[in-house]
Image (tube, rainbow, N blue to C red):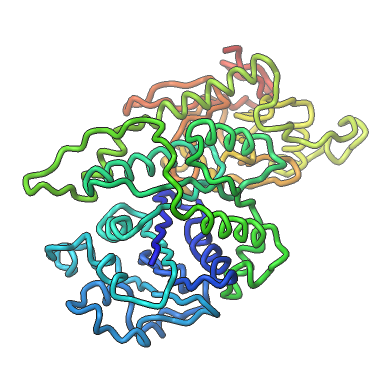
Length: 464
């Protein structure tokens, strides 16, 4: 049975969606597919309308069984549709990795899933939806896999996330003495926006033929399909997502036996512990050590600076072209904090000028390009440096994420969180180093007279 693991530790990348949708697309082609859920959150079961309370046995129970050949598959597997069965998980699967969870003390603790799958007949292909963390569950999935797909959404941190996953796979390959074939699958792509297109090209430039030729576009039908408990190809066969996953399924079948693309950089050496094995934590630490998150942020900031200097758009023109402001009284008289106030701020801006901080009396607008990420939030003293309490709103008609902060006059330090990553505002060149050695972005809020220090009125930033 050919086995493919779908892995990425970064949330919001479409990992489970890809597992379910690809499995459904392969099954519709006549391939007998076993979908294995190694994620304790049990999203595969939820996305296929299987209540956790009705699950009698899960993948964790089967992995702990001494005699996997004797398992009653009728109590373990769920028939989803023709040619597609699910081996579900439950929340209690998370405890399997604990010291007393039952898995960590086994001699073959990293081979239990491979042993289980080897005992099951009747399928052409197994798709494993991996846990979102590097631990024994993911370790088992990768040890069992012949190939690996890494879904990567088209946001600012796409390349870093992809690099981290590839580095982890290289380190694991050194531990096993073999390298599983692996490909990156671009997901949640918005071709009408310039920034995701730029990131996709950078991904292809960085990883070459390791990037799957099929791109999964953003499509709301995917969420609707999950609500109805069906793969998107079955729920909305004419949708863009259904076509994308059908194309991915065809590529997966045609790619069998193909040679892996040449590695873009050599694998880093990995030190073994006293018993000659490498724990998941060691592999993750080794892979993470090869990466420099600040370098990624610096690259973003440099591109932003070039865009500001040349007045060229970085992520497409964020605001639609309207009639002049004076002919639109509802915009000219917009209330503070309203969408119309944001529109009035962005109307005269071109390209990257629209992004970054825009001070206004009584507060400040923070604006970022729509393609920055899925979830954007601001943190500072105004919210006790909370990473989630002040989330940006996505304004589709303006092509931006934006947040209005009501702040007193003066200087305010802030940082952004983008899909869980902390970063300075790449569109604000004014920054100060915080006690942790990282840059905090600085914004000025004018007083009631509209004056402010450090930058000119109207949100215009000082020259770099």
